[in-house]
Length: 332
Image (tube, rainbow, N blue to C red; front, side, top):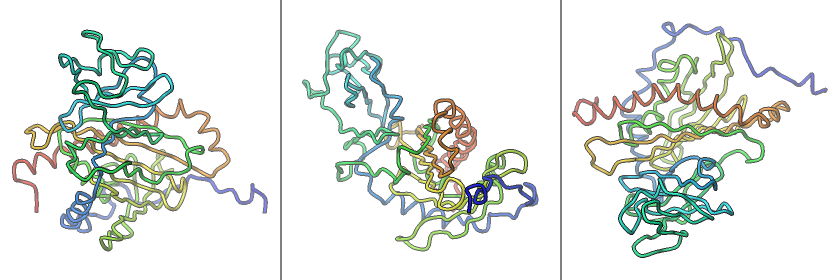
């Protein structure tokens, strides 16, 4: 059979009901079921690793990268060879913000008095373990995580690096990481809350047990009007601050969307803030996908814009959940 005969178009014309006529999902989206999934996720180990941002945002260009994680200032930078370093974000001399300093010949130089750090211990300044997985950068903070530390973070399985297009979106919300994770462990809200992106969503199989706790979802991604791309996907939470959506059947199989929730404020803060770092790693076995890889620099802003539209709504969801929890008005 020729390639032309085997070719199938990625788009389908949808004939399903409009938004108001779709079947309600509130009976299936049982609060206890979502709470149990969240409880299992929060009980998993992280090894004290936290996602801080996109790998490509930390460049060997003379500028360090600053982030606060769990109330702890962190600074990251690369040497001239691309080696990644991380450590406390306050200068050990007089506490200057090292995230606003400069990197000179691979060395971090404080802009207050010129103290230089090469990534090795100096005075009371001790480096943090750091990991670059090629898409995201993780830092290990044992004083924040307070677990048994692990040598490496639990990076989700992704499609082979050479054949993907990836983009990373970040946003900050007034909530805790568990509120972001709970949002992602409620797939039933997809076609109600995000009809511009998802239609015809059904949860084919909710979690069955502690060993098989994936949400299996059939959903169509809306492209435009009634043109959609139907897929089957699984939602899992491999660690307490991460939820992974993996396409298992249909267009783009093996592609993943990783949602990582990193606390900016310390535990118990009255006004908690959490940064959402979402990595979209798209793959396809279609011959034309090579053109998408070649156009990746132009596609990434569009991918981030699409993620941003979703997170404008989902952060409102997470923030509302935190407000109800903090006032004692959260159902159940």
